[in-house]
Length: 356
Image: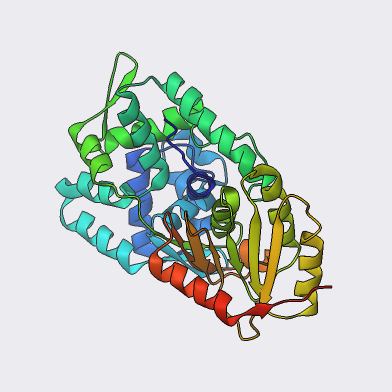
């Protein structure tokens, strides 16, 4: 049984763990205290702090401040301030206050911080599925799954390179996931085998796969991955976007070569010359049909598979929106009836778009 089931989840793992290869609790707690004292902190300041104050040799590389800032952003501890600066979020401040008031409660607070971090959830799910596993087997099997999906994400233009096992390669499993899970009391180690503790089993049992609120910063293409995910195995998906360009053209072309079940795509856009030019080029793809429609006051951005997942977001299907902007969206593993109804209505009020 695969642990990583769809392109969206593979991208979520990749982007939310990017650059993080090691963990030790002492360094992490020192960094949190430093951030709390500063309130607003730059990646350069974090990097300098790690070099001076961590005993971990991996903290000396010169890029760790940037990577840990990204991690804390994904964990919700930090929010962007300006440039390379971050500030503590209200959620983060609340957790740090709890930790300061009760040092004996440290493990519970740390567990609260990481309990929704998806790369860790997948790591623990794998161990739960296996019962027990060695680090070598974990990196071989779970890392092998990640390689499979990163190759597909590379084809789809979500990643800049494919065939990547990270974050489940041998080094990261041994230097990040195992020490983190031990410090959180979620795994036991013995005879080179790793097993879940009762707390680890409870965490996995209580975790519910539901709709995701997605935030993306420049360089984080999770919304783009969600759009690709919806199209990945749909038969007749619907794409709604006021404006489209070569980005959606390339995506649809690649999807057509991967998804052999794809028979038709309904495209609802605004009636513009550029949109029509893109649709004309896409329509030359012989393996499936394109049904173009337009609604001139269109503002919604939705990609949906009525029988599968959907994503709605602030992002137009343009490279500037999907790869360079701050955007917010929601990914639904199963399309809600209300969203399906909204898409149905958009199709109903739209008109056929003549592109030739």
